[in-house]
Structure formats: structure tokens, C-alpha cells
Length: 96
Image 1 (spheres, rainbow, N blue to C red):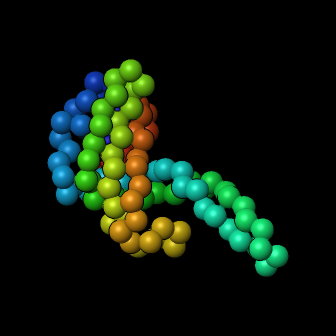
Image 2: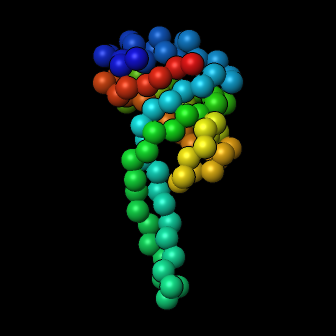
Image 3: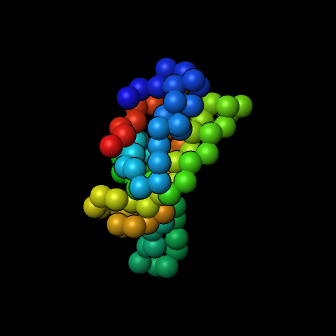
């Protein structure tokens, strides 16, 4: 689904229930430690599938926030790790 407007996000918000699965592209911070002990942070774009635990709709910022745990194996994110997807108009999302 690709929501075209804030109204579409509202309808997705109304459809989602605790335990549903949602897949979308997101940015995740990764922390690295070098051999010298210094630390760095980078942000990468990845696709995550979350098992919905809570949702929040914000019409003013045109965003739907979906909080949940990672439900699929991923090289960069461990199973069960918490994450929040920030869904906006024109951002593709898969509901199942």
C-alpha cells in the first residue's frame, strides 16, 4: 500500500491491531567500535517487519508511528528488537 494522503494514514491506523505485521523502509542507527576503541555511529536504510505493539497517529505532522518488535531475521537488527516505523504519505508500507 502507498498512502497518498493523511486520510490514507488514518485508515491504516484504524485497520492496525496489536499483533499485526507491518513492513516498511526505515533508518536505523548502527554503532561501531574500531580496534583502537573509538566509537562511531552510522545510519542505514533497511526494510523491517514489525509485530505491532502500539500505534499513534499525528495529523499535524502527517505521520503514523508504529511501534513494535522486529519479527523477521535481519543481519543488522536482532529478532525481537524494538523499533518505531514512521509512516508518511507516499512511503510504501505492507500490512499482513
